[in-house]
Image (cartoon, rainbow, N blue to C red; front, top):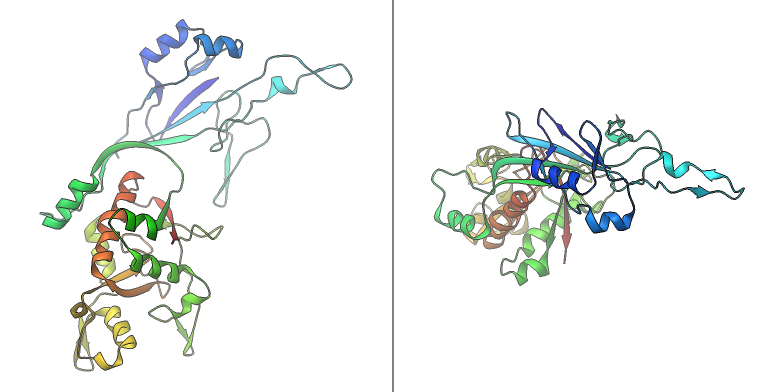
Length: 342
């Protein structure tokens, strides 16, 4: 049995051509929009469709959600230990998927408790949900884009429109993989690993102080910690730049020009250069975590900045992070997690 449903004002229907082929091969319409194949597995293999194609019309926000609901039933008689017919198999579907909660008529019977979606019982089937959009993701929204960033767009792709399963993706940053691809970002990975590691992240800059004692920071987004709150994408370069101003400011301190938190950290590590040389003059760039391109960028004192190798910082932002956003269709407020590897 298979059915579908479009959500958020969008449709989700089998294409007429596929539906025509299905009916010719033995599929029947059980109810409105619900189709069944009632025969043996051998017959299904011989004449049934093994794939289904759906079409969906997005609503005004150009994003549509299409939930597919495949369910498998055993219609053969099963016998219990007393020689009686066991009707259990006739009453419940065999779960094929693990997202969403639907009864045998395709009706949504799930409910949300807190932030967890809960199914109502063993007779409910499970279904995958796909989200489709027509958004252009991966393009730097400079006007006009710089030569370097335009080249990155051409090399690593700008994607318009796609369909994805609605799961929380994980941005895995691997030193060995990035180096093998010719775009190393070791310094960025070290910084993020330190920011996510508790209780040691109390030593990341700027220190979170209570009564002049360093405190452990609560930084979200750690895929290796069960229950960690995700990061959420902040769409638009202008919005990310506004986030960066929170820690990448320029102002006079003790009569000397400073370039944000990274200058203060650079001078913390290099006392002899205090007020003499900025971190930018050493060829470094200011790296921040959580990323400025997230809503969590510099929330309270639970964030970290570090001046790092400029080329590796560009490799991370212009190649790896941007490609991750694009390929996983992360639009505004979409959640994701991060993971670091050697």
